[in-house]
Amino acid sequence: MDRRPHRYAIRAAVAAIAIGFTLCASADERAEALAQGKALAAAGHHEEAIPLLQRALTVTRAEYGLFDLRQQDVLKALADSLTAVDRVPEAQELMLYRVRTAEKAYGEANPRVIPAVCELGDWFSEVGMFLQARMTYYMALNIVGTTDSLEAPIIVEPLRGIARTRMRAESYPQSKLGRRPTPAAWTKMGVVSATPRNERATLDQEGEEALKRALRIVEADPAASPQTRIETLIQMGDWYQIKKLPREALPYYQRAWQLSRTAPSSSSSASTTLNVPVRVYYPTPQIVSDALPAHAAEVQSHSVQVEFTVAADGSVRDARIVDHDTSERHAQEIFNAVRAARFRPKFVDGQAVDAKGITYREVFWTSAPHE
Image (cartoon, rainbow, N blue to C red; front, side, top):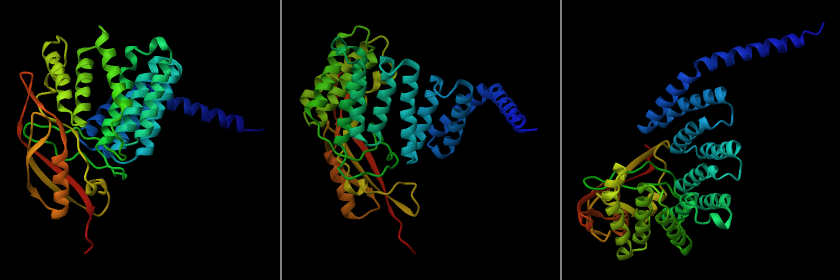
């Protein structure tokens, strides 16, 4: 008598029981693993966060299936932590999977896929894969496709993404840059907009026209949120700041400032976003571009701290090195880069003003000397 069917039946029964136990505990376990993983990631403990987020993903798929939209949040959180520890290929697979999941749920040509596609484009841009980012945003535009939809509000984000990718790429040299953690923050009245990078691209007509088109759509759309209007106006101002055209940038900043004070439903971040100077351009020094990742074995850190004033036109003035533990050549290289940086200026009562006492500490890593 052939007993193999009995063995298969037993295995199936055991699998069914295991799935049953998973489903019973899944909701609480998923929520707990996801919450703990996100908390660890927010604190910068990505290595510890990854197993928890992977567990949350496994439970979600066991409960809802491989292409259920309820896994999108877990996929994004896990991809972010994997990216932070340089496991970029794995993160890329998860971000692509998010798009496939949206396509399965809505259909490939459905405009509801566009947010997931744009988040993939944002991820490509953040890790310095600028060509892939641009292609992804154009893929989002192609989903809309028809002439009647060329001014549809849903294309605002891919248009802004095309411009944003150009703006990010402008700050970074052509040589490939190893990922590094965000440097110590601007102190006193400033903050930093930090992103990973590798290739250089110039601000061209394509990005400018895309951003102008996005702004036209937003301003013509009565349903556009104040947050979207403010962010798009500020991005237009940032574009001109990067081009070192502060006079052209100023009206966009002022309109954003006014809207942030008058819009009844604007968020707290929108109403305070022009209260401090924000860096929009920084010609990354070669020593920083070539730096080893912070988590690599046998490395030592170096830093250069610079104090300066962000002038009302967004330029850097009165810069001076206040501390460094590297060679004079490397310190000067970083100092020159800080002096060449461009900022979105600080606004008071709708007017751009000088912001004094800003400090920036650039951190980079080199191979530790062997004893």
